[in-house]
Length: 396
Image 1 (cartoon, one colour):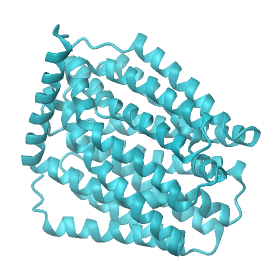
Image 2: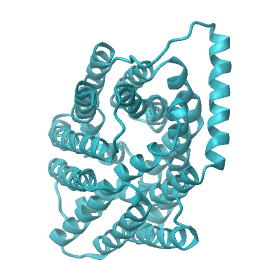
Image 3: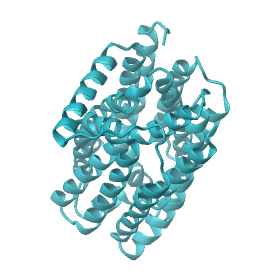
Image 4: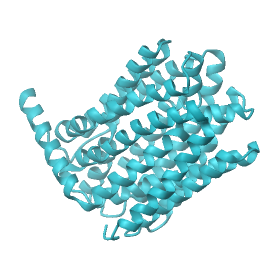
């Protein structure tokens, strides 16, 4: 195995989380609410993010296959840095929406490209093993970094609510610079052609990926279960801050709650990295969905703060277990030359599900409260997993 590439992958994953996007994770919703947005408007802002992801996912995924995964990742980090600067400078719904659009475009340049760079670099050096262990460990480092960043961001927000955004912007700029110098693509053959030809090639790659994804049984499975998962977790992602604030947790302590979230996601990812799941990913993915649905439903109705936090942390354990399994399941079954594009195609489902989930859960929370929104989310996960299992033939 090319250990240098793996270490670089781990390092960039950690830094992008600790010094970049996760630094605002414990103050994101409270920052928006302090600027006058209600629960529905908070979700509406984030729905713009997911809608932009959906529009830009395939073209930017094709960019990575045509112009290189490294270039795509560096562009992503630059755009994410810019979006955080715009966010910290804004105080209106319009400003927040502009920042979300920039962030979404940045995310789409990274989706598929970063993992495709790792997978194809390792295969170029002769690695033929499973990837769930690598993805699981990378997720572990990412979550550790996220916990560190969130605690720092929560305390920075006490000084100035915009400060975490500016520090995160500087952190992502550093990630872009580091990636430019340390990432290499020995397997990648650069092409020389005009922008017109390049855009045509991007279009052709996107079309072939869509055709492949629409016919492949494994890709369809990923699309369905990812849609269900992302649709459901939006209420959990967006409302854990006001939920625990209402139960007496102070703003500066939300970073520690987020650290707990990262720890339990990391534990789930660590478990996923230690088991031999090849051929059993499908059952494990569906089982984790049921586990997440049940634990979050119990957390939502718990009237005791410690029990609610423990149950909420346990639901994150299932979510940490889920992601590496999905990545491993998919990358074992798609062709190398279209890896980034197909991964981006599979990224369309969470974007659609995320946007719909944000709007619906926002309305439910605004009209009936966060508890009801969480119960609905948990129920969708359990019922969705049951329906997929019942209708699947287990051949993928």
